[in-house]
Length: 320
Image (cartoon, rainbow, N blue to C red):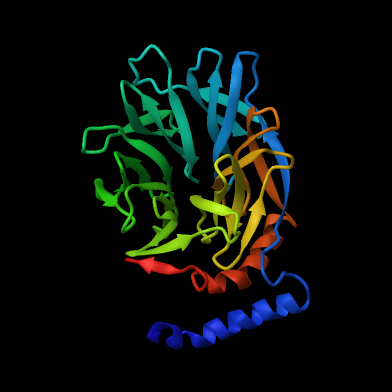
């Protein structure tokens, strides 16, 4: 309460901005309606079964994974309309299994590869170097996201972790009261998003906040990515099969569904609010997608400057 009162002037100013935008019709009263233009991303080739996108940086470079007709997995990079395929050279397993999960603004790509167990990796495509990251537990290590500082997040066993590049240390992340925790992404401020048995969450410092899509039909929510402005994307489940994407600016939620898709899962967002992810079509085929905000990103950021002054006020901080 003291912190809120101390900043009441800033909050009042932000509230005035919101009220003004509502008054002139720029924002609806109950939901932030962001329009997106969608396009499919499919890794080319007759031997490709399916592909999906998982990360995008501020230069618009996209990473993801494709699966060929032998069920091998390969990481890919999409830049200026051209695809490049990558396989981690460390594996001794005859079945190639490399997955790319995220890309930062330094050209470093996080992911995993299979070598009798999943092991974390970071590939720097600017220097063509691979670095392996194994959790000290010695078990499987899933790396889902990283920031420009090189900090990694992911999970092992039933616990999430954060790896700090500056110290070389792994630390556990456990959403209080949950039976499992999975960390999906980390931004420059060190804010972490993910999901647990308690639902979607945002970890900021030592505090955990609910990320829960505001729809009575939503039975669960997962937060998959957060940009440096604090905007979050993820998906929510309607029943056991239907999945819908969303974007959350800290105050409002907006639906992000690929047109006509049976299921949509956003996987990454950059600071221009461009989104990549995956969707299933009506024949249950998996594809990647790219979504650009309409109006253009610069306009969206201008609009977001008023909204993000209130980041966290509607998020319910449940435990720390």
